[in-house]
Image 1 (cartoon, rainbow, N blue to C red):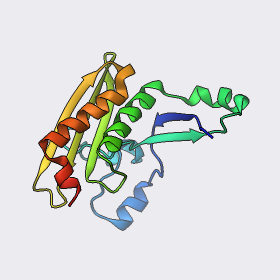
Image 2 (image 1 turned 120 degrees about the horizontal axis):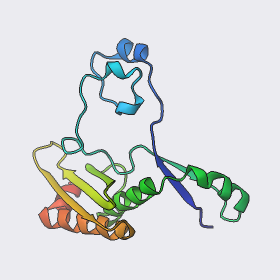
Image 3 (image 1 turned 135 degrees about the vertical axis):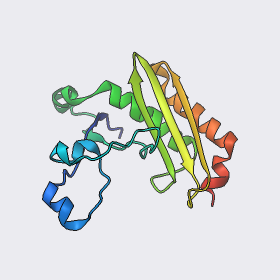
Image 4 (image 1 turned 60 degrees about the vertical axis):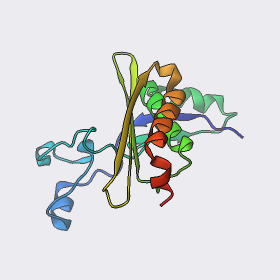
Length: 162
């Protein structure tokens, strides 16, 4: 049975500032997940540290035959996040991987254009391959596959097999 998916970028598990300071002197967290905002000492740009594919996406699964629930949860759907997720997941699928790969992918909308940045890194971090692709949001999956093809041409499959 197919299950419709609705995506939205957000945070889970918002740590309190006191729990952060009790456990560690330095913490890297999603900026939206840190409370209060004054505790953020630096923002790490996406170009510096590309997050895992699908990071921050919240999905709601419903029964495929439940039209009432579909109508109710459709208000939660963030179409831009859903398109971004499709591109990011395409990179993972095309490279034959899952959540354990040393792979980052982040897609976003910029003036109606889908922009995807993807990286593959060797486990020791000595080799980092990167690519950026952009295009029409209706081609999100194809943009993700093109990014994966470019990473493969740079040697990503060799890195991912180690």
